[in-house]
Image 1 (cartoon, rainbow, N blue to C red):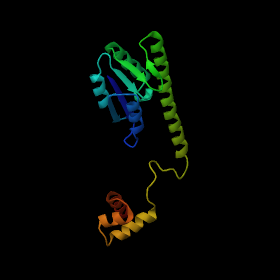
Image 2: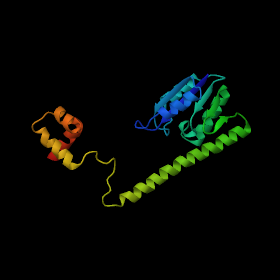
Image 3: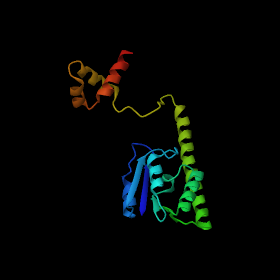
Image 4: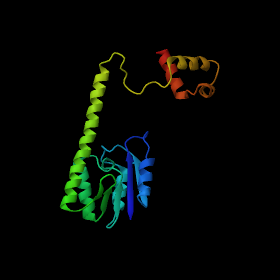
Length: 184
């Protein structure tokens, strides 16, 4: 049987493209989760691994969806090969249980880990540079301007939270937080 595994790192990312690709590849059952790849404890991945049997094929769209590090990838593939499971990484091809196949897989795993590390390093460097600016503010930018929040708080004096939310689109929790910050 052909099993697919799709993963994104955050709840805000979309799994649909990976799932569609796995469906097009003929996967009969697809496991998916929104879970960071840096954690070893990925519940759906563990469930999938326990399901796989001799003769099955595990399909992933990219190597970085599959493992959190080179050593993790190598150990997982080695375990799958011992179990008689084939591994197909779509942007790489079928990983063969041969000296050459394992070598290529190890090299590609190293490159995937290197790429992830470089992204983290560049992100940290960019953040360090940004922190040097006087106007730097950590986190996501505010969705609403101060003027919009002040207007909504003024409306709150004569309307309910629900009414103000319907009028402005600003959620009750945002209004409560703004009201609390105003009194501090």
